[in-house]
Length: 594
Image (cartoon, rainbow, N blue to C red; front, side, top):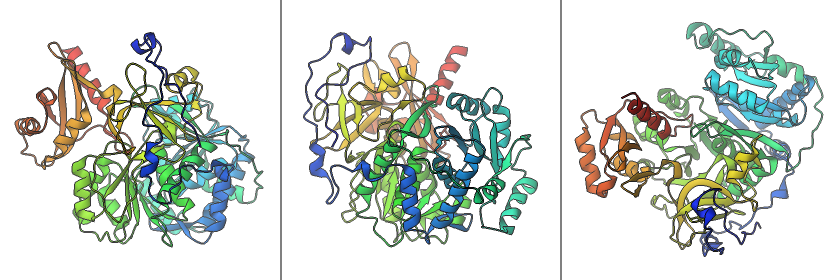
């Protein structure tokens, strides 16, 4: 078991706490969460159970060879076929000179090509660099240059972006694929027709010039006849470079080792497998697998259970999503608050039979109580919220999966995962006790090795004892349950009072005429900052006065928004997390120009 240290996490250099450090002491929160663990959930996991993700993958393929691993565009991919294709792709990568430890970028949506590429890269001994397919040229160029990737696998819809981003990078190998390529093994008429429709009829593939590009089908064809040289990865070897921080600054590559990912999937598996013990569990996957939350939870945890994964390539196309799942019976699903909200606004979804649904999980952003209550009213099941961040592979805490009592949503992000310790650092640098707020700090086997080529940035968030500072403000109760208050960087200060956007957003989201909301602080000469909210209306007749009146009934005066702006949509990340920073930047630009 990883033991807590006896000293508090040191404050940032130059801060008031650094100049006047508080007395060192052990907080009375340490370990109190164990008494609240569900039955059969261990305090610790054995991370030595697997030497690498490749060993985990090979074991799953051997155990579940005949089962369906993935469903996409009405086609099935079995575990056995996934193993065969991943091995062939790994052999091909080795044949073109990809060396152990070399970074390989994967720029793919949720299709069969993603797991084939992911495990193929790992079997070749290389490091996976996950890339958002919707990146701009600037964003992609930064990630390719920063990672030093020499190979990229890309969906043909985004190949033009790759072409424009290549100058100045080290990329020499480009592998291109289309949506229909892997829908069948062998002659694939359906796939060819689908590719033709997307390219020629719907014009969804912009023209590009990549003369060095190799079709993925050709790479696999070559790989089938090539030997794969086994590469023995160790716990300390990097498995993923997972970029983060793009919403708060320059994106940094979190170095996630084989140990980090193995630890996290075993932590979550130990937590959930008591309830997920059906013959074949089916999970709905609308969140992109290139995002660490979906990758760990949907791809890896359910692989360990021999589960069946329904891939959704574009969750924003709700009409198509409903078409895909119309005749599917899934036992689990993952989503973020905005996506659950979109599901609940869809009439067909609300009329579904949810008798097979066991587990609905949420992460990535705070789940609003109004959304959670609507979901339970429609499905009869609670949303189980957890907490994590890229730097922790990503899971830090989880709510108990107590399907018998069907607990009401209370906003808690749960208990620390097995083999994980959590503390809260106050502004003076000392550790907080029960009921005291502070910055959430984490220590455990899932905590990243550091940021790629950024030792100074790493030192800012991980201390010498291994405590990672998350930047989130939270508090722990006497049972060990954690409640987040907000992001430190999103804190609004009105006349010296702390105002947390999550609280305002939760209140406004409860209004029946509101679909989405974001709250930010804008500069104010008299009060330092004032609260502004951006609202997407469910009812077009909703007025700013009605929003403010609703807030006055539920919030202290200084928390009530002074400004309300209605929008058709709010800026979001690729997984649906609302970007407050983008809204703040807009406001600051307006004020500057004025």
